[in-house]
Image 1 (cartoon, rainbow, N blue to C red):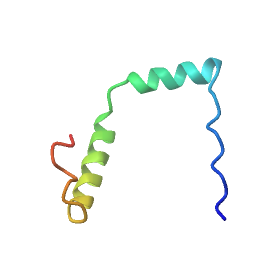
Image 2 (cartoon, helix red, strand yellow):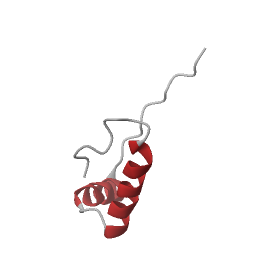
Image 3 (cartoon, helix red, strand yellow):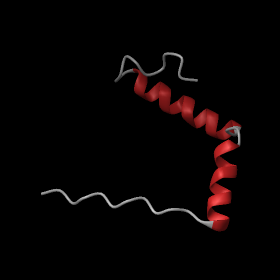
Length: 54
């Protein structure tokens, strides 16, 4: 039988603030390049990947 998934811990204080700040930052050029590379890799395997993804 599968192990149940544990609940995600709640962030508090400094960790919560850092998470929210990072969430609203625009992606860096390096992150965008990485995402585009991943999209290109999966285009051959999934016909829906790559259609207006980025």
